[in-house]
Each structure stands twice: as C-alpha cells, then as structure tokens.
Image 1 (cartoon, helix red, strand yellow):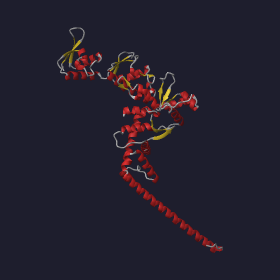
Image 2: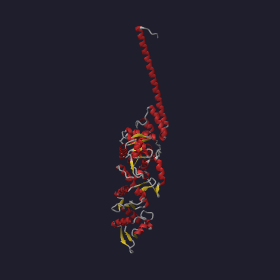
Image 3: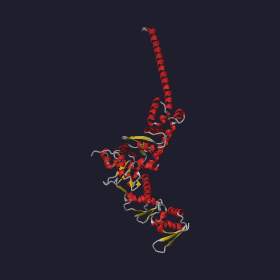
Image 4: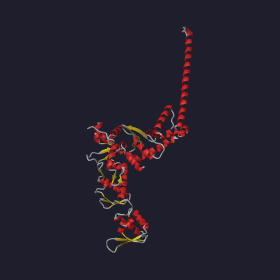
Length: 197
Length: 251
C-alpha cells in the first residue's frame, strides 16, 4: 500500500470545520486531537489532559446550564464524531472525579452513574440569590421557590431555570445564616421563602 | 647574477637568498597591511550601514538576517555582549534576550503536552501570536539565533533536525537514533503504530515497542486506543500543530 503523506494540520482543519462548535459553544482544539480521548498512562501527560477536560466540562455546563451529567448517557462532550473518537467509561469517570475533587461537582450515587455539576458552588449560588434579592428590592418579600427560579426577576441571571435541588440547598444555606425562612405554602404545591436580608 | 664556483659563489648565493627572503617578508607585510586596512574600512562601513539602517534592521526580519550574515563574514558578532558598541547602536541584544525568555516560557508551557520537543515552525507561530503588539516581527532565523544564545547558557536548549523538520529540544534527554527514526516516520500522518514501525524500519516487535514506550514515558508521545480497527496509535504532538493549539489557550 503506498502511503500518501497527509499534513496533519490540514487534517485537523478539515475535520474541525464540521465541528468547531457544539451548538453555540466554541470547542478548544485539543477536542480534535484523537489521543485526548484516551486516558493517558504517563502521569504528567495525564495531569495536563485532565486539566483541559475539567475546564471544558465546567465551561460547557455553565454556558448550557447543565447540572447533571449521566456517565452512561450521550453527553455531547463525551464524543467527537468528526474524528470518530469517544471517551470510554474509565476516562469519563476520571475527568468527573477530578472535578469532584476540586469541589465543583458531586457524585449523586455510589456507583458513580450520575454527577451533579456545581459550576457555581453552593455558597456562590447563595451569594447570587442575595444579589438578586437586593437588586430587586425583595428584602422583606415572600416568594415561592418557583417564583425565585423562574420569575421575572430571575430572567437574565444564572438563577433562571436552575436546578431545583441546587436552589434548595442554596436557600437552606441562607436560612442557616438567618437571611431567610423557608416554609410550606398554603397549597402543598410549593414552598415559600420569606427574606429578611 | 652569474653563478660562481667556490666559496665566493656560495656566499653570493647565501646573500641572494637573504635578499629574496627580505623581499618576500616585505611583500607579505605589505599584503597584511593592505588586508588590515581593507578590513578596517569594511568594518567602519559596516558600522555606518548599521547606523543608517538601524530601523530596518529592527523591523525587517529578512534584512536583519542578511545583516547578521554580513557581520559574520567580517568576524563581528553584534550579540557577543550586551554592552559595547553594537548593543548600544542597535539595541539588538535586548531583542534577542527578550526572545530567548519568551521561547523558554513557551517551551515550559507546552512541555506537558509535547514532552519538551516542539516544532520550530510552531514555536515561531506561538511567539508571533504572543508578540502581536510588538513593533518587531520575528522570523525563524531570529528564533534560531535566540536559541543559540540560550545554548551558550548551558540551558539544555538545542535545535535538532528530524526528517524535513527542525525541532527545538528543551529537555536534557537526547534523542536516540531509534527515536529519531520513529519521529521521522510519524511526520506523514502525525502518528505511528507498532506494526508500521516494524514494517517500514524492518525492526523486531521488541525493538519497536521498546522505542515507542520510551517515547511515551518521556512525554513525547500520546496513546490513542480509540480507532475502530482496535490498533493502538502513538501520536507525536511535536510533529503536528497541537502545541500551538493548546499553548494559545494556556498562555
């Protein structure tokens, strides 16, 4: 078989033309270099690889407002069809575990099948909520949890449409600090929050 | 002069030889003096030239490179010391010093990805990107000069040639011949397989595997087990454009 030399640079450019972005998200170039989809055995190389993937995953989740990643599901970053490569289970777990170790994610189950991504830490969410309250003059108001999550005031902020579980944890943190009180509403549908910021 | 036999003849011959020798020495001295004068004229003309074209030398890499060649011919090294005439006139010592520092920086930043071997072309590209705001453009020739100055510091920096490419080595480990051959082979597609190495270089499996594993351990190669044919591929970031991709995001 005669070997046709292919300039790798051109190869990468051609393929990345079809996948420079994932939705609106611009992808870093390591995503188009096949070996990055195999967990590297050499420590220094692996550390760099993990760092790059951690940053990409957190960034992507923040922009797309993704809170949960299922390891066995089709999370878009886990494969790049343009170069015909996918992360195997071991690699996926390694990268997400690294994020967990950084305190920016939590395993939701013992078998590490679901991972909660805290692209804002809980205390950061708490600060964002306080900011929302102050910005909108809600210091003494009462709102339902849903109103906080999807109400007019939340539009244009990270709070809008956020994961309810994470929101509750942030609210509980603020409750412990005496900034608000959570109570059961008149109808059993939703909980209410009285702010005393 | 007529040759005369006998002692008188010998003395005349000796005197003649002496005179010829003196004449020869004078001629030699004349030639040397002439050369020295020519050289000194040339040097002062070179200095005039440098003064006049200072800006061009600073801004234009091709011009700069030719200037260096001229200097080399005359035995002048504008970079020999940061003090002195040339440094003051051109301020060129600082330029190369600065380049050297930036080159070291880039090599260190990309080392986790390429194991300490980077394509010269890539290095220059990253350097140009970093220096976008600067007045002076940078050529490969400038990079090579800056690196040769670094070498003098004993910092382990060296430029090696593998196949058609020049690679800059920033780690003390030297490339063995076997490794060099694999790198050359990898330039076609950016990667090799064990089988390919065996076949193309006519090596045993053991020899091929050993060499590839060593390159892997030294951080010069990355493995790729994701191809559907199931064969492990060894990729070499230093022969492709990956260093610049990753470097531009971390620098």
